[in-house]
Length: 110
Ligand SMILES: [Zn+2]
Image 1 (cartoon, helix red, strand yellow):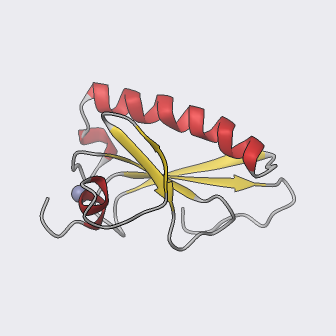
Image 2: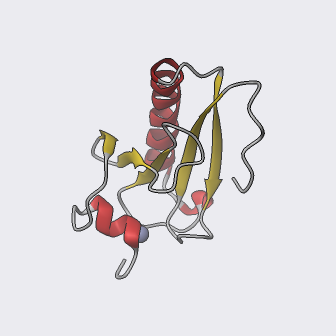
């Protein structure tokens, strides 16, 4: 979609610190992290809302989210990885993955 920053990242028009990529999905570090390792996972194709993604896209996103959560938990010595799915701030489905400690203050706005 024209003028969508995440589509531009997926197409390589805007640089991002990529964490993972496959045919359907792309993960990169959030430019405004709420915690170290805060990662965004997006489908490469443009959909605003999660429920509108085809099954193969949503399946790939969740398999990838699970794999990334395991990886981030180890890399950032986190107790768990918080997940949030939104599409309002940037209208392209994205899953926030935020490594957290149980003692951390809850991340707001996800
Ligand atoms: Zn987009």
